[in-house]
Image (cartoon, rainbow over all chains, first blue to last red; front, top):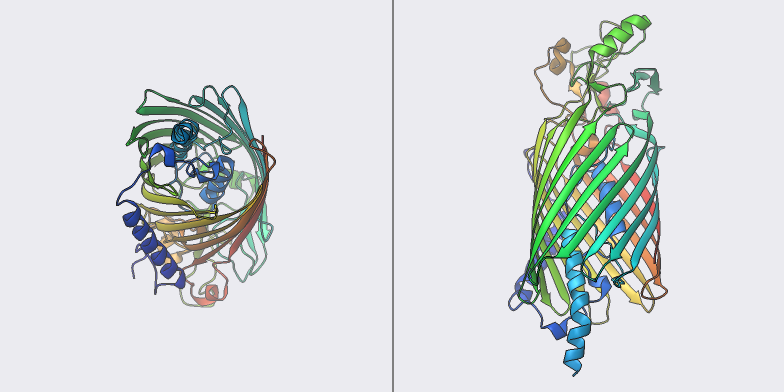
Length: 87
Length: 451
């Protein structure tokens, strides 16, 4: 298989998990999007601070910096950043 | 009456939650993490991170303070300061060998040795980084909001600056938020000893006069260089139902300039038959041949990111995200991140799992052969043995425990463990007996206090 392919060699068990997660996510998206949204008085749970997409900006920032310096990928959730030599 | 009350009391926090989501979408770290943002107050989040890699590799301590001033619940200024102290060793990219190896330190003022069979690590690695950022966000009118931000960081050999801006459009009673953002970064790279000329041979002072070595060293150097990064993001945040919030983001990033790591090298391996088959190629000066790495001077990345938060009936919260990244260096990656927040009165426990899979860059090579090196007349224009550009799998296991004293104050401790494994070309001859892809493991602990 080409080195530039998505995966190398035979699929690993973790990939099955990944595919399953993607499938579940799609199912959730389809089910949820059939009539998405809530009325203003239905926002009680969404207003919970733990329901913010990024609960702790500091945690996310520290982890993003670690992974930025240890992997070839960055960003996604936000801008890819840079800001370090990260040898 | 109940509905009216609820409308009044809940709609603002949701607006804040969405604004924070938008904020996160744009890489501006949401700072009102406790949503305690009362107008006229500062919300402060502090943390200390201690990071440690095994085998005497990178050790770091990183204090952070993030403060958000809420002007009227919707207009906010966030200021953030991060400091970083790093010591330890970093893999140089060279291969282990059956013989002792000597490398020149990046400054050219000395060398370091690696014992037979040991992973070549550059232990001259030491740095201190300070980063500051500021972000302002505010509504334009009922349907639009904007944010602007600036970032700057400085370390001994690297300086980075960036500005960003975003515009959000609320639709369907704020059930949908569309966001577009742009970031422009300019970095200045000023490596210790000067940036090496890509793929030039590392000079080694054994068997040479100081003047001869100095001349050879300066011939491999070029002046400092710059790197520019332009990022654009387009995102949709959607309230799915009373318990579910979802976000999709497409990001594109274009980097140009000096994208090489000035401290990484490649071993040149002897591929002529004989006693040294698979050993380090020995140059005319009697020293092993190593070359400095060279990466392309542009990189275009695309990423797709999807995140969902779901509150269970018992109040626990699931947080799942997936990111797909592909670039024109030939790298693709998949990142799956799962958290489950188990809420118990004033405290919570949140286990965390992350899975990362990456394919190697087109120019990734664990080593060069003598034929490829061709006595310095290389046919290659780019090559890097940096393990971070190779085939990689990463697994992270972690957990966070937090205690909320009240709506404003929270104490939390978090621990994470990362294991990275690499795979690839196993070498030939005597090289095949070496461990070319040692695992990398790292652990970090973070103590946080918000008030």
